[in-house]
Length: 87
Image (cartoon, rainbow, N blue to C red; front, side):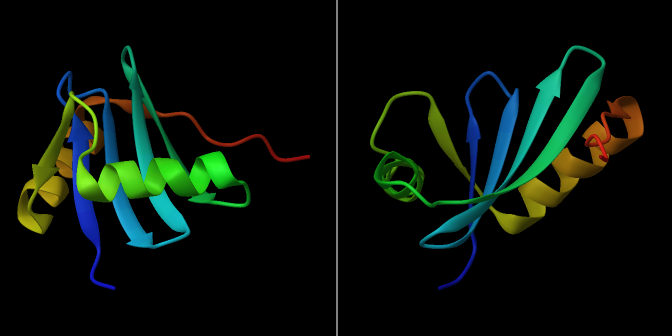
């Protein structure tokens, strides 16, 4: 499967669907951002990935890889990354 790129219309979440069961999510929270690799282990998570791919609900917009990378660069240059906690 080729990666699929999506975003919420409010530009606060970007998605790169890598496979049918995993995606990269970038969340913007004020002046900060977080990145997550989500591996779908439950049925609702798998449905969410299908919804992203098929754009099944209002507010999801398609992006090209170039647009995704440009938005990600803008985010990284203007926001502070929230690092995951390390135990």
